[in-house]
Image (cartoon, rainbow, N blue to C red; front, side, top):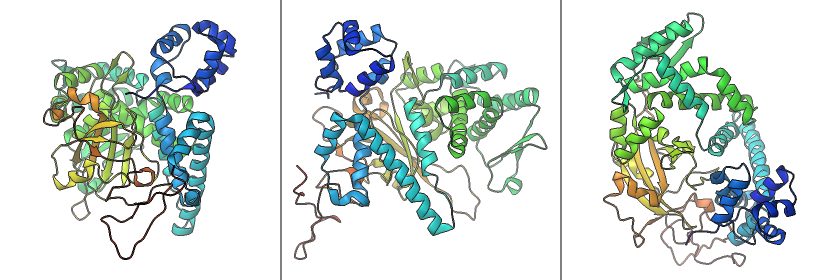
Length: 483
C-alpha cells in the first residue's frame, strides 16, 4: 500500500500566499470549508482527484505540490535527536513522526536552527583545532539543497548548451552523440573566435597537479595532457560556461537567494559542470538513447564519448516537465566512506552529517574495480530502491602521489528497475528478499544490524560482561521511551 499524501502544510501555505480564505478556496475546489480545514491539518489525505482540481484551478506545479517532504523532515529531525547534545532526551521515532505530521513548519524551523548551530559549532571546533580554518559544510549543504529544490534541472542552461552546439557547429552523430574526434577542435576554434582565447594542451611538467587553468593575462585556457579526451572537453566547457554564462549563473544564484560568497562560487562551478554535461550529452538525444539502451551506462558513455561518472551525473538531470527520464539519486564516496558528492532524489534522503550505511553495495565496489554492482534494497520506512555502483578512475595524480579512489552509486525507486538492463538477472518481484539497508547508523532503527557504527536514537546501550553478541552494540532491549 502506498502512503497517503499528507501535504496539508503546503496547501495551507499556498492558500495564504494567494490571500484566499478557507471558504473561497473550498468554493473553488468544490468542497466544504470544514473538509478543507481537515486537509490543511492532515486529518484527511489529498486525493488524486482533488490534486488535479487544484492544478486546474490554480497555477501550481502538481509534482512539487504532491511530493511529501515527510521523509526529508524525518531524517533531519532524527539527526537532531541523535546529536550528543540531545542524546539524553531519547525521543522515539513515533514522537518525531507525530511532530512532523502535526507541525511540519515547526519541524522545518528546528532543522534549520540545528543546521545553524552545527555550522557555528564546526567553525569553533575548526578554529580551536587547526588555526582558524573554516569548514565548508554549510556552503556545500546550501548548494546541495539548491540542486535538490530545483530537481537538478536548469532549462536556461539546457538552452544555452543547445545554442553553443549550434554556434560551434558541433553536429550529432546519427542524432545520438557528438563527433568525439572533432568536438574539442571545434570548441577551441569557437573559443578563439568568440572570446579571443587560445586553448592549449600542456605537458604535466608544466601543469603539475593542475587539470585546468585560465591564464587571464596571456588569454589562454590551459588543459593538462593527463586528461582523457572526454575530460578535456568537459573541463574546456566548464571554463567556457564560467566565462560566457556569467549572467545566467548570477541569475540562478539570485533567484535561489544564494548570497554567501563561498556558496555562490561552488554553485557556479557546479552549474558550469551541468552546462558541460548538457553540451556533451544533448538532452533529447541522450534521453532517447538511455531508454533504447535500457540505461546501459557503459554503452551510453561510448555512444556520447563520456566517462562513467559524467553519464551518471547527466542521468540525474533528465527532469524536464514533459520529457522526464528515471528520477535518479547520486552519491560518490571514497574507500573510507567519506561522501564527496551527493544528490538526493526519488524520495531518498541522505543524512546531513556522518557517513553512509555500510550495507550499501558501493562499499563493495572497491573490491571489484570497474565492475558494475547491482543491489535491490529496502529502507526501514519501507522505501525500496534499485542501485548501481562502480568505481570511478581518478582524473589523474602525479606518480609519487596517492591516487584518490571513488565509487559512484546511481539509484532509483525499485519499480523503475524493470526499465534497466542491470535488473534482468536480479529478483525484483514483490516476494524478493531485499537487502535491509539504512540511511545512516545514527538515524537507523534496525536493531539486528551487526554492522552498526553508532547507536540509534531512543535506545539505551547494554553491556553484558558474561555474553558477547556479534556487532559493536547490544541493542536487545529497547528504551522505555521507545514506544
